[in-house]
Length: 448
Length: 122
Image (cartoon, rainbow over all chains, first blue to last red; front, side):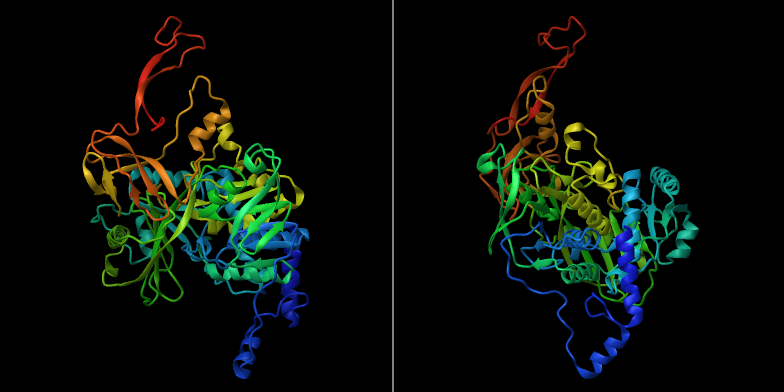
């Protein structure tokens, strides 16, 4: 923590002095004007490398979790002989498909502590990584449509206040004041009775977060290998076939570009997490479900906050470009297929119109889906597994993006110190044998 | 939305059915270790491939049955025919009383009940 703060301070100082020091070429208004006028090319943000034979740490999955882990390994712990492998491209999975909402008004003390740290890291990210992540701290409203929902909101608000999180319950008039386009009359089938208002929540540009971590990690010596698919994880001494399974020890991975040896292999592959850990002989309590989202044509800004409705299974925010971004709950069917469905669009449109009748003439531009790695208790699976050297940072389900920075920080600590940090202790894989599940009912913004 | 081949009702909308989940055989609760029970309750194969699952036709015949589905493409194969006893586990007596108590004997307060289990070998 101190190291990262020091690093951030150094980066900011470097920016003030107009030179990057040991940082990559800096993005600034001056550089933009100069390169705009001269047509000079920007340097590559991260480099391609040949695969080395051996690394200290291999991270599978170049999304926000994998890249943040690599970045904090390099900055906080000085471990730079790290390879981040991805079968696709940087931020091509859930990290680039989410609806980019960040908040920390969770329900369990474990969850609140965790996301509050994540929000802190998001707040200082632009300065730390010298990239405009366009963090818009615009406030986050979770609407209550029933008495029981309102009671839960009060509960969450009280838990949050105890943890020092800015979160309170507001009435329909205040809701109307914050977002005039919402229908707060008694006409709808699910009238708005109040909301849990969380001012520090907001939206952030998810691609910039991925690129910022990739750029920062690359400059510190981490190698990012795109289009490098892992076929197998090599394990010795385990109880299953080929030495895999409990009691085994990781020796490396087999990829489409050859074998690499490494004592530590970290699984940061979200929806594909079950398949990757199965290569090491570790079964996970995960099922993969697609979550669909959609975006409209851009219009003038009219929705100043993030609006979430649990009862209507929808969340909506307006981007800086003016598009409305919608998301819903996960599809009930577990599948690796990311095809969109008409039933999603129909339900979404119906629910949005119930909330905001005035957007009925807006047109959807496109819809897409991302894969969510759902666990039985909606909490992640972080840290060590029965196979020595195989660590997981999966099971994030519908809210992995919010947790990206703090997961990277704690996973890096876990790898570097070979002990489980206190913040992620509740999320260990053994909890499914012990029965100590962490029921995070505030996990997704919408119902499960 | 998928068309799900119900063995009794024919192809039906996915919303008419509930996907119960991966089919796994249930360990004997009297003898299972903590790890076996934890695995049965929580661990899943979750393959991107063919998978045998249990479905419940909630808006139609209200029967449980097994179907093979490819989770990468969402195709079904070899759907069961009406009358197939696929996936219907036999009634099994579970002894939840003190160990050593005979199933069915209730002498020292051990309760005995029967329930239909979803699971077992196909």
